[in-house]
Image 1 (cartoon, rainbow, N blue to C red):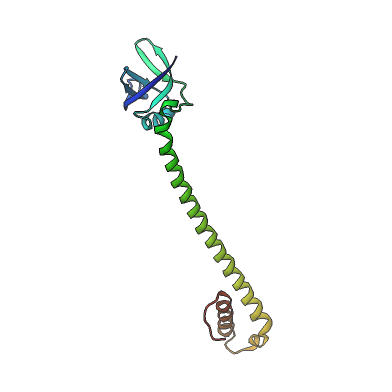
Image 2: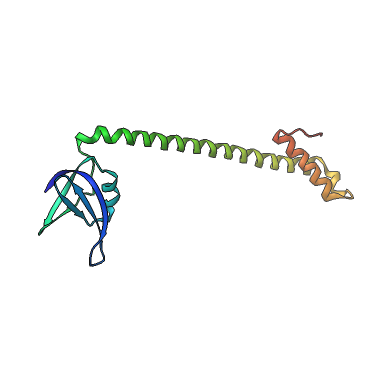
Length: 157
């Protein structure tokens, strides 16, 4: 049977068979829930009216089949503004992460392009470096000058 309850307190217990269940205290009485996937939702909605499915087994009343649990219409005004604020904060954080990622991507493209162009210039415009005495050092110096120039650093050319 469907029923609207307002949870006043929840706590986890372990049964004699080793299973974990959640005890839910309400003004109308005490309920149990054996579906562990519902524990976070039940704990988070203390004080908010919830529509749940109750199944009676002997003297016990268990909350079952409430996977689609949402606050009732009456509680939505208290529930959703909090959610809206949380969603807004999450979206801001996501946008900030996207901005940082795009900035890093632009920097990576700039660095890769400057390295490519510096290699092309040194190889094609300085053929005399092939026969230089200190060949590796001179090629590296020219490469660094060109790369720094493309990156916008002040370098004497």
